[in-house]
Length: 545
Image (cartoon, one colour):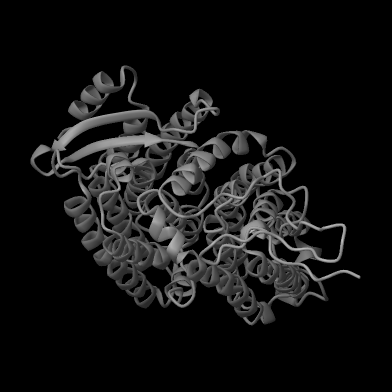
């Protein structure tokens, strides 16, 4: 199917401009154009690639502007028959859960393309970055299981080649480890997708359409649980969670700066997004059944990631382990099954991408100046580069979750929403906020404070181009911390609709938002209601005398 035919057919189907298809095709076409540039003009690769990526960014802003925040369903849908005999179609759509992930992907890639120099072979580097952008957007908007799998796999090749071709000393080992882990998860995902389509399709014929399969709920209980486990493992590898996380620190540490930014901001979200879109939506009963285990895994990731981050000597590796902790919070929010927690999980996906992406940019800029990331070899950078230290402080405080900055919003919603149904898990996870402050402030103190060595005194401050690259991240950190309402307005209706679907097709009962978390009698005993299956809605309090 050609791009022109796809756009034309989708326009006819959707009754307007096929915005989502254009978001996928523009960077894909840009990758092809850059790849076909003559070898004598490598200087054109990055400017041309940035142009195509920026067009996709502008289209994503138009998408957000036109999006109906009050509508919790899928919007801007386009459906084009792809392989009719197998029930496979090019079906794309966006709701409040996927909208801001599409916008984030579309804006981060042009920023890093324009602001980060690959140092060699700019033509293939730019082409792979554009293909990564196209595949990621395609995965976030795909409403056909086969189409999602194709896009989910497309992003592996560019990231593998970016790490292996433009990374640091251990890049080949890190790239191979990344590829093997994710491919193993993808093999399970493919089997589960085929089983879900073959066994769960309605009597009218086989289909890979997500909405049809989710509303039909044609799988037997045990089959649905097995398929959910396969889906979940594939997505948990991508998140990643402990103990499936060991590829991430290596990949982040050895990846080039732009690769680390995109990996943190975009690719990790394919895992948590997959748990929401294809876990809860396709397998509501199985999600309810497996929720205690997944919440436990998420909380373990919060604590393990924070403790391990505090032990790192490499600043980039410390930031990588902080991602494990932050993604654990998101898993907790998803499987807490409350509107606040799920909305907070989605908001945290976006905020983590902004904060951690900016941290990787700053670490990359520091490495360009000092040619080391070892914390013990750095000191007193603040005296030589005060602007650099100031920007790093803002982004670091955002990652910690300080009120007034974007990182606080998602974590607060996750904790307050999870407390209703996952009380003790939430209490344990809350300590992760304290641990994050410990390891990030300690690292900042050692790197930026203290008496500088001779080399540290010569560290240049941020240049204008670097400030321009970091400015969108700083603005987003402050703006979304002070006024997150536009994001929440779009996310909440979609979260409510997803949880209503979960309640309809499982034994889970949503907690009454009007009921107090802890119900206290005026007499001797106070207790709270708890739902079956280990989902505690309110918990128990001690007798009072």
